[in-house]
Length: 136
Image (cartoon, rainbow, N blue to C red; front, side, top):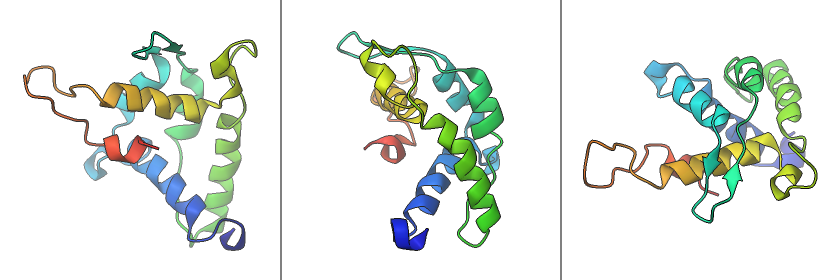
């Protein structure tokens, strides 16, 4: 893996995903919040609606993901096998979003949601704590 991806690219990418979704709440993970983002459709400013994604994929694959580390190759293999399903094209092949995978759609939904005010009780814009982690 190191030769193919270099600089721990796979481990770091999967760890970032785990920190958002799989990590315990005490460690900064927000599984309930991200499950909501996964399931609900989101409309972009240009009027295009990003589809809701199947809850079972989140519950069975993402939320159950073990903590990625480069010292545990079996864990990395298991995670990569699970994540492979989320990298397949999703949706109706006649729609533009269908040529994208579930993870790509999910991160775009997060980017759309995080650019607004994360705390509607405050008048001043409060950006989401994870905005830098989901921006391309």
